[in-house]
Image (cartoon, rainbow, N blue to C red; front, side, top):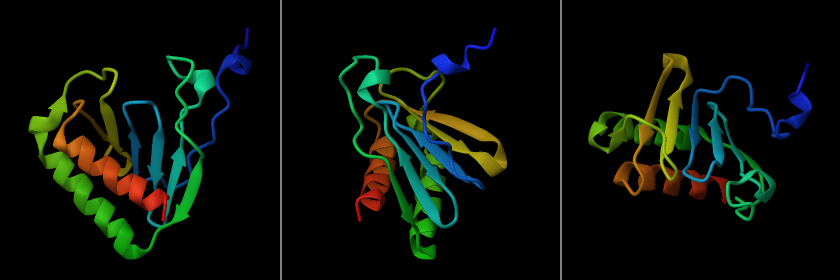
Length: 125
């Protein structure tokens, strides 16, 4: 029996994703060389039934903006003191698609905060 109709209808990530990040609330950021796509959690699918991550966004990135993302992701990757082993509520998950690597950032860590500041700034400009 196919139960796919019960799954949430979420936007598909863009093709050629290089990095993705799922924040502590389930909001997703997908990054390609020239695009950042934000797919927010909706109240319907949030654990509380109330949280809403806002409006979805797709923003074209300049090469300088993409370079900024690459630098911060490499810093976060190297700062393994902020990494945790298991995904828990409030943690953030970073995926490096081309390298088939994934790591989890602990709740309230500097790496998680720095990454989210950059992403939020880029989707609101």
